[in-house]
Length: 280
Image (cartoon, rainbow, N blue to C red):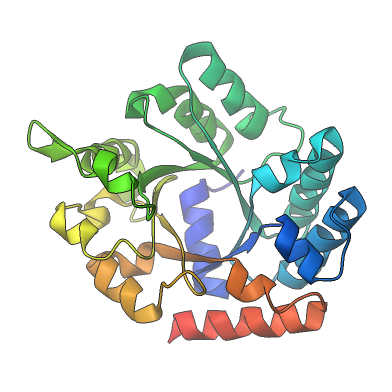
């Protein structure tokens, strides 16, 4: 790839706006579209989303779990989604939150991000709670292949703060994730680009970024902010939560957009409304 993931993401956000559209085919939503909750319904749902989102948003984020439910046939649908979006020139983040150590993490990295991956996304969400350095195999593969990672840092679930806000030697656990990303993104920062190691920070975490003293601008990190829209995140809360790093934030919305289905035209119209709201 001619550009690293962070630079490609920056270009896509400038072109299409800072929206990541989710593909979350959970049972209630699939059935609300009048589809059967089986592989045929999954495929119809997912490919309708591809039709609506491809070429119109900066990033599309399929949630792997909702495809994995259907075993190998569901994964085949997921692979088709990723391939079709890539062919359309639309970036993808696979939301799989993988995390392990040693050879197992290396295998995850090769499976999702490697040169010979079957249907690689442009980026993968990962869990660092075995330590930031446990992600090193994935960081190295992503760097080699021009792909990216989004590392869980601050999540909106009630239990998250007990771990992520915890302090050790004057630094929070979330802060250690920012610190790690800052080091890996240093070359991109020197080029005036976003790095390819991003962070996942919920759109509804309130003042946590400020309270914990997280310098996202210095870290040159793209931020994936789930929870925008139906889950309570607003344009105003994005501004107050992320402050000077607001331009680095990719707001992720699923329910607010997918609830407009099943007609592709309605999904397109709702997507455009959300993008315009984010652009202000």
